[in-house]
Image 1 (cartoon, rainbow, N blue to C red):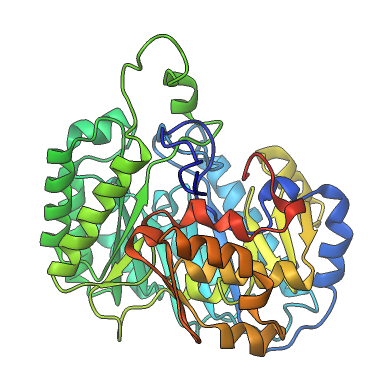
Image 2: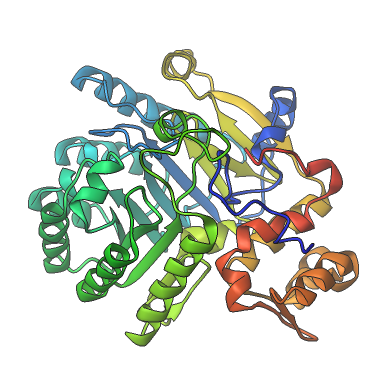
Length: 442
């Protein structure tokens, strides 16, 4: 049985998407000394530095969401959190690892960053700009839920320097949106997108999810066609999964139980077929593949600086409750609940919860597997940066995945086949160190 065939094809509980390496379950509180040591050292300015700001507020909690978000906070809570977030950036700005470095990218994620008012966003960015310099940042990304947007808020974002607006559309079918707990409906999508286009943002990205509860072939085809009609600068297409600790993980009846589920999630072959259809349609419309999840209209003009920087070893300050960051070869995560986060900030402490220092081989694996998500890697890059011949180090998994038809290996380039790209996340653990192979990815 092949590597891929041995993996269950039904959508069961657990994470599928490989967001980082080593797996998060291996990050431990006992490694925090390594995190503090990394922050206390000056680092070469040649290494790009980014800033991630977690805005954890939402109008509703999507039923598939496993991020740290809150739907029950009042205006005073929001103000307190925003002040803490700015204070956390201030604490970082004093660190030797950060002092004097300019930001290469900034990313407002969530949750729903666009939940904040235009006034709150303007004040927060003003305060942040006084602490860290992002005037020369190559990219400032801002995630939005369409129903939280007004024309004046979008105008404020443009004025604040947002270069990439990312709209969490997910689907155009109102019944699908409602079944999955999305706060917005299709009318709000078109209204928000029209405003954003009129303001001429450098890049408008739209997110779609293949395999949401209630999805069908006909509905998916319609969603893809409507997405193409919008003509976004880029599109990101994820495959629905059922992580632990989601509403769906508690509501849905799993396949190994006796009763059929009231609403089913498509299996992985179906979701891959839907993504393949979307990719084919966007390619017919003149788009270009940028990664296993993304297509861009103009590859010369449209880039993903946040993604590509992290996948090539950039440092990043992860700020906000439950946020992840990376500094000088050490992964770091903040505390993941509300009061401990705020209490530590109030005490003037960085709200760190767990970490893991990476050895040279782990750093190599991390960059290699993440860059494979773009569909191609060049052995010369790893030879120059790590002094390793990846053909030799990973001869067995490369050979196996090539035999299974997922990779095309040439002398100085390794590319994924179409089939390999569509299921890249379940292939990547083949490159993990044995001690990093755990039953749960997260």
